[in-house]
Image (cartoon, rainbow, N blue to C red; front, side, top):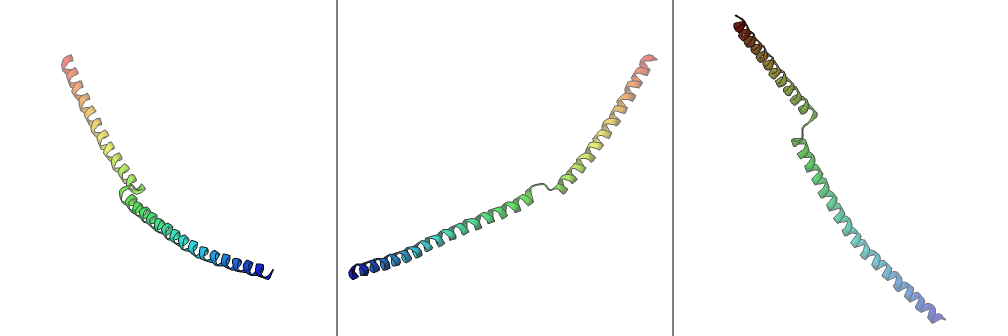
Amino acid sequence: MQEILTWVGALAGLGSVIAVVRFWMNMGATEEAAKAARKQAEEAMAQITAHRVHSASEFATAKALGEAERRFATALETITGRFDRMAERLDRVLETLLERRDN
């Protein structure tokens, strides 16, 4: 019986050693996976930062859109005024032609 207990103890010790070795081997693989994930996260953050800079420089802001709208409205008012003056001139020309025809 003593001999069986000795073998059981030896097998339990060997199992413990194998478990410790496997734990540290898996720990190394886990650390490598964590490093790879960290590297991917850093690359993603760099891409996001680059996109923010690009967006800030390329896309219109509310202030710029407001300024463009103001310029457009001013230009539209100028064109409307020119059409009004042109219509008045045409009215005068037509009136003159009608007066000449009546005389």
